[in-house]
Length: 428
Image (cartoon, rainbow, N blue to C red; front, top):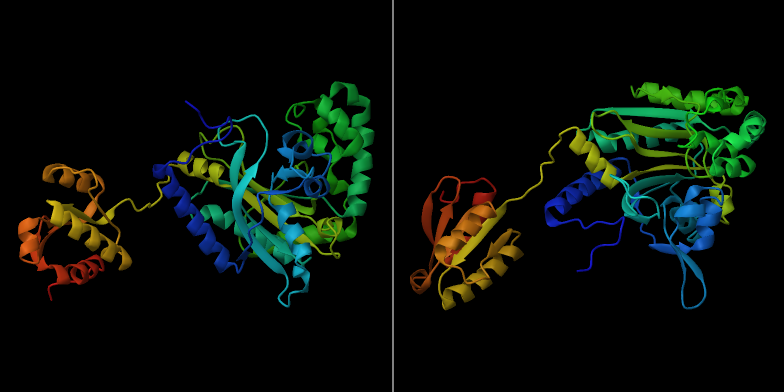
């Protein structure tokens, strides 16, 4: 027997209905915020992620699925969505569109080679948004409001928004130098990854899971002490907009995102639901001014966030939220005899073309077994068509909830069912 690769999973029909429901709600929410969908390839040039995500990140150094194609080109399964969206933005010159900023959303599988655990797999599905072209603090607040609404629209309540400012280039450089001075005396006490990060990207030391309890972490220089006037004013404006929308938030000067392209606003949404797990982060995002230029485009500010559908579903489970997934069938056709079966196949097709959800027996079951199948499928209405009914151009229609059973001509069956499913009185 061949099983799925480690770190991947099959989404079976009982679960895929939940996925479809969640995806539809997020799609509808995107329309309300006036975002348009973009779809990018599953794999890209490896250079895109090396430049866009950053050589010093764990993603690029340890987690990417990279391979050579037959032409000798290095390609990588996308580990995140932002770099691909920005690449498409630059390649198709979307910065020249009359409507700015460009507001985009995406769904799709991402791939990272990391240790599989609950809610964290090697293939996972992300929903994300990107806004390109605006440096307005109000759009930062909109992106965070959007992220929160993704969870609230599905009923989640145990949510916490954590925000930070990483500052502009000047602020980051000053903070970087302070971090190097602070951690250098403790370099040999840090893990191998952090020793490497201290040389290349010391901000990432603050994000280390292994060294989080090291005393030097608690006394590390705060970015807030190194924000210049512009960065400080910008962050204050972002928070003002959040307050205007009555969105509570917490400030955390040690919050850093795992990708090199972030600056200014950074945020995460946490779940405080009991039983959700040790890793409480549901989603995160932030501003990435400079990424468009890095990928060959004009100077363009950007901001976005992404969430994992898998972790969203786990959060719903932790809060005992049942999604109103439609599991019932409109009509099940019980057919008895060869000629009745042929007519049933035609009738089922005609019903489906009329927008009715319908099925019938393909296993040559007896009448009693067919009714059991109708019950299992939670059919609202059952058609019974036998040789006698067929001779008289009649069909028996049973409403399963009430037990009411009536006879109709074959020509009347489809209009009757459509009216009944709309909630009208089909006999009036």
